[in-house]
Length: 482
Image 1 (cartoon, one colour):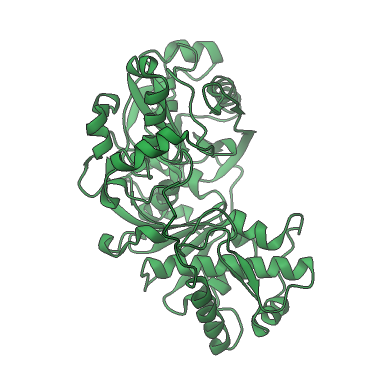
Image 2 (cartoon, one colour):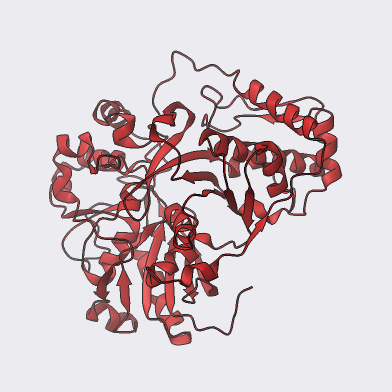
C-alpha cells in the first residue's frame, strides 16, 4: 500500500517510446505524484525524430513543479533501450544534439540495412538478433554517419537516453552498463569490450567512460537551475535501462536467483541463472547487462500488439471470467503465433497468426483468448530461459486476476510469484538513490500465484498442442535481416 503522506525525495524521469513520465517518489520507491506527456515525434528531414527541445522544456519545467510540491533531492532517469543521442560538447546548444534523435520505429534506408549486417558481429557481440527498423543504436549511428558524415564527425559523444538527460543536467558524459547492454549492438557484454562495428568505424571516441547507474554526477548545472527554478543542490544520478531497473528492484531486495518476467508492450524475461550458451538467437533471446555489468539472459516477445490482434480493439478492461477461459480451453480454441511482423519465439511465424478450433463467439471470448495467449507466451518465455525455480511476474497483465494463475498452470513447474505494483521501472530507478542500503526490501509486495483451477491434464495437453502448432512455422530460405 502506498503511503501518500511520505515525503517524495526522488524524481524519476521514465522515458518510454510512447509516453514520458516524471514521478515524485519516496526513498522506498513509492510513487507520490506523476506528470506525463506523449513522447513527441516529428517527421523528417533528415528522418523521423524525437523532439528533444520540446521534451526538454517539459522535463525541466515539470521537475521544477514537482520540486515546489515535494522535497526533491535526487534526480535519476530510466529509459527504453532503443534510444540514443549523438551530442556535441555543449548541453546548452539547443537540445545538445548534433543530429536529431532517430525514432527507432521506422524503416532503414536500404543502403544502411545492407551495410549493417556484415559489420554487426556475432550473437555474442550483439547480444540479440538484428531486429526491425532502427531498433539498435549501432544501426542508428551507421545511418547518421552514412547520411550526414560531416555533422557526424563533429560529434563529441553518443549517449543512451538516461545518460543524455544526466548530461543535459550536469554537463558530465558517461556510459552505463545496463543501457549499452540493452541490444545497443555497441557493447559486447560477456567480454566487456566494444563490438566489432565500434572498432571498425572508429566510434570508440564517441563512447564516454563507464560509471555505475547509482553513482552521482554532481548537482544540476547552475545555469539550468536558474533558468527553470530547479533546486540548486539537486543531485543527478547516472541512470539506468528500464527493464534493468525493474530487475534491480528485485536484486536489491535479495531475490538474486529469481527470474523476472515483466509484461506490457513487450513481455521481457530476465534470468541470471540461465547459461548464455543456452540462448537461441533465432527465438528472440538476448544477452542483457544488469547494473553491475553482469550478463543476464533475456527473452523477448511482443505482447501488447499480439494481445490486440486477438482481442480486437475496444474490448474493454473487465476481468476475464474463469468459466469463459475453461470453455475456450475445453473446446481447443487457441491463438497460434505470430500475428505481428516479428517471429518472437517461433522462427518463420511472423504474420502467420491464426485461431485454431471453434472461433470465439463474442468480444468477451476474444478478450479471454487473448489473455490465454499472452499467458502462453509468458510461460514460453520462462521455458526458453530454462527457469526451473522461482519466477516473479509483474506489469500490465497482472491487472487481470487470471493472468498469474494461467502462467503458473502453463509453466507446470517452479514457484510463480507476482507483484501488483505497476511502477516497477520507476521503483527500481528510485532505489538507486539508496544503493547499498536495506530500503529495497520494503518496496516488494509479492504474492504466490494459485494455479488456474482446471484439470492439470487439460491445461497441459492444451499448451503442448499450442506449442506444437506454433513450431510448425518454417523459416523461409528467402528471409533476410530486417
